Amino acid sequence: MAGRIPQSFIDELIARADIVEVIDARVPLKKKGREYTACCPFHNEKTPSFTVSEAKQFYHCFGCGAHGTAIGFLMEYEHLDFVDAIETLAAEYHMEVPREDTPDSRHARDEKQPLYDILDQASQLYQQQLRQSDRAVQYLKQRGLSGDIARRYRLGYAPEGWHFLLERMGNKPLIINNLNITGMVIEKTAGNRYDRFRDRIMFPILDRRGRTIAFGGRIIDEGEPKYLNSPETPIFHKGYELYGFYEARQSIRNLERIVVVEGYMDVVALAQHGIGYAVASLGTATTKDQIQKLFRTVQEITFCYDGDQAGHRAAWRALENTLPILRDGLEARFLFLPDGEDPDSMVRKEGKDAFETRLKTAIPLSDFLFNKLQSDIDTDTVDGKARLAEKAKPLLSIIPESVFKDLMYKRLSELVGISETKLQPGQAADAPEQAQTPPITSPRSTRAVKQNATRDAIALLLQHPGLAKASEIPEYFASASIQGLPLLHALYRTVRENPDISSSALLERWRDKEDFSILQKLIQRNVRGTDEKSEQLAVFSDAIQRLIQKYHDERFDTLETKLKQSGLNEAELEEYKALLRR
Ligand SMILES: [Zn+2]
Image 1 (cartoon, rainbow, N blue to C red):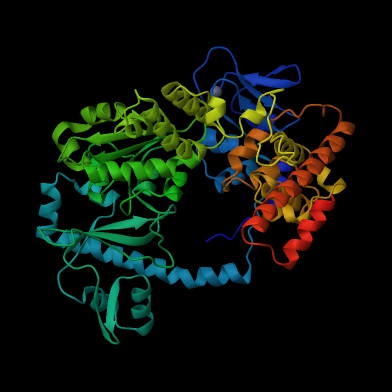
Image 2 (cartoon, rainbow, N blue to C red):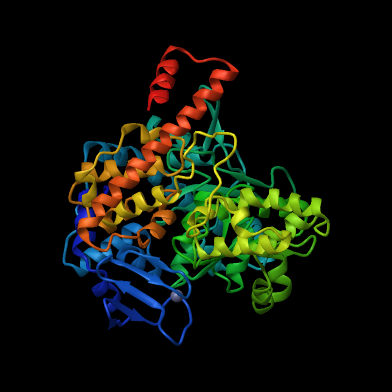
C-alpha cells in the first residue's frame, strides 16, 4: 500500500501545472481576449460557452455551470479520483509522486495486511467450496446466473458446520486472532468459537483496489436472517463501501452512470443481464459518503427501490444525503419498481432492454422532492403554500451554491407564490443597491453590513493568497457563529502556514470539505474595485474591518439578551461593558 502524497508536493504540482495546457491537450482551446474558449466537453453545444482563465487558473462553463481547477478538470473529464488525477498531472509534468513512508503509515500497513490476506484466503476457500457443492451451484443456476458472472463477482459458498474456516486455516493463535478481528468467527466464550457464515452463498465485498474487506452471505433455503454481513472491522466501514463498485469499474471503461439497488443478488442479476453498472449500499439507507464516492466517478446516479413504503423511505433518505453534494453537472434520479418486484426479479422477467428503458423513466430528484412534499399538502390554499415553503426551505438550503440550487428555489417560488429572494436567505444581500431595513429588534445593529463583506473577503483571499501576509484576521473568527467567518479564518491560517501556496492549490485543499462548492463559486467572483493590484489590499482590509464590527454587534446583542433573561457572569459583563464603550 502506498503512503500518503505529501501536501507540499500537491501544492507545488498545482502551482506548476498550467490549466490552459492541461485542458488544451484534451479539448483544443481558442484564444479570445484574455481567456480561452471551446465547446464545452461536459454538455452538448454548438457555440462555445466553456472558458478557461489563465490568470485565475480556473475553467467555467456558462452553459452548464461546470467549473474547477486543473485537477477538477481531470477528475471530471477522465473520471478520476483525486489521487489518480494528481498522478496523471504529475506524469504530464514529468514529476515523480513522492509517498510519505512514516513509521505510522508503515505500522498501520503491517497491521492491516494480514487482515486482507486472511479474507482473501477465506474468499478462495469459499469459491472452491462453491464448485464442489451441487446444492449451491443448483441454486445459482436456478437464479439464472452463469459461471462467468459467479467468477467475476467471486461468488462462493460457506459450507454447513461450525468450524470450516478454523479447520481449513489451522488453529494458530495468530490466525484465530485475525479471523476474530475480521468478524469471520464469533467467539462466545474464551475458546468457544465458530464460523459466522454457515451454509450461505458468499458475496465478497471489495474495496476500490479489489481487495476483499468483508462478506455478505445469503441463505440458500428459507430461513432467518436472509442476509448476513460482516461486522464493522478495522478494514470495513459499512457506511463507506458499496457492493459491486469495483466490479463495475473493472468491467466498464468510462463508467458514466450507476444504479444503486438494495441487494447483492440484484447487483449480480443485473450484471448477468448485461447491466454491469449496479451497486448495492450495505445497509438500508445510502449514506452521504457512499454517494460522494460514486459522484467522484460518475455524473449520474439512479436510485432504484421497491415501490413499497420501505422503498420510499429509503429513497427519501438517499435524497436527503444527496442534496448536500449535488453540484452542477451531477444528476440523481429515482426509480420505483412495481409492488412485489426487485431488480433481480424484474430484469429476469423483462430483460436488459426493457429494464434500461425503465431506468430512463426514473424521475429527477427535483420532481421526487417536490412531489413528495406536496403529496399531503393542499397547495391551493394559503396555509398549504406556507407549509410547503416551510418544509422545502431546510432541504433546499443544504444544496451547494449552484445553478441547480437557484432553479430549485425558482420552482419553489412558483409553487408557493413567494419571491425567490424571500425564500433564499442571504440572497437578498447579493442584489445590487437594495434598500435594507435593519431589524426593529436591534436598533443599535449595523446588521446592514452586507453579507457581501464575507463573500468579498473570502473571494479576495482565495484569488490572491498573498493578502494574508499583509493582514491580520482575529483569532475569534475561528469559532464565530456568523456564517463564513470560520471559513475565512481557516483559509487565512492555511495561507499563513503555507505562504507560497497558489490560488488553485488553496482551493484544492478544500476538495473533500463541505465548503468546497462555495469556494469554487467565490474563486470566480469579481469583487468590485479590485482590478488593480494596489486596490486589493484596501478592499480586503475594509471587508475585514466591517466583519469585525459585525461580530461585535452580534456579540453585543447576544450578551444583552442574556443580561435581560438570565444575567451575565463576570467575564461576560466585562465584555459587555467593553462593547458598550465601542
Ligand atoms: Zn458546459
